[in-house]
Length: 205
Image (cartoon, rainbow, N blue to C red):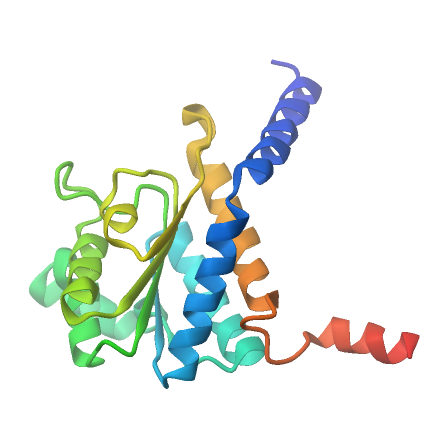
């Protein structure tokens, strides 16, 4: 496939996928996360690989723009690697959440392509963390690429990006960034403007 043809196909898929995202679910997720903040809960953001990178960035945005107390276990490399070395990868996020005393006031937001699966033994650290969140009554949200994973099955709201199988990962991970930026800009959550929005508003005023 010629580079021009691939670029056209890829961007056409992006446009098509944007049209399939449930606006109702996005609003519901924003309102649910706003409720976590209002009841004094914390938001724990979980991801692996690209999802871990998203989690770190999203923690910043939720804290700064939404005034929502947020954390991710993958920001603490020392604890994460110690738990992996001493106890195994599968329990890393679950143990971190237990130490953080996750409870019913809190929320969990998962960025994952598959959402974890016990059946296929994939991303078991996410599976166990989501199962714990469900057990304690925390709110669960996810932006994932599979309706069959643990996250989609147990979440209060899970937005599933139904990407073409041959480009599943890049599209799902791209839309995770698009949608969390939509969340932190949403009227149900946004507590202040970003820096450049503030600059532009001041300049135009």
